[in-house]
Image (cartoon, rainbow, N blue to C red):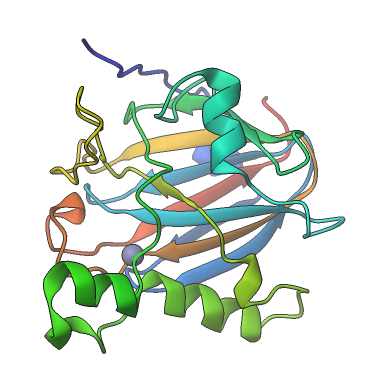
Length: 218
Ligand SMILES: [Zn+2]
């Protein structure tokens, strides 16, 4: 059974109003306004892009993995997925996807999870939770540690077996693959471009991503 769906976008990067490369291991915090299109490009392939969305008007309303899974009746994010909020509004809709599958149950890596999964020697390694924390502490946004909840891992492959087991597999993405969303409300986007060196999801090799924002679909 294949759950992969692919849809390309017609938007031209030359006409984007924002075009920015985020190196591996760095965070990005930005606002995407209602009606804008937001694309994340996996430049070199098999990167994990840990992402949280919040309502820009009230960050207490935030991305809800549970409500997103329930609303679409499926575990994987792809074209057509409405990214739901904790108030059951749609934050963004995925409108194009050339990767075909994105995870929202694997969570973000942290010093604690690294220690449990890969051994105590990984405790001091750079991780997504630290990147998230540093980004919100260094920005003028009303977000704290408590706001770092279940996230999206764009381009990450975490298939669930028929027995219900969660498995971290080799990435299904490749250089140049992208996911594109339309903002349905003004949203704050917090990204940790994962620095993980212990997980096959990114082939043990964190790489840069490219972010693009367009004002309209034309
Ligand atoms: Zn990570």
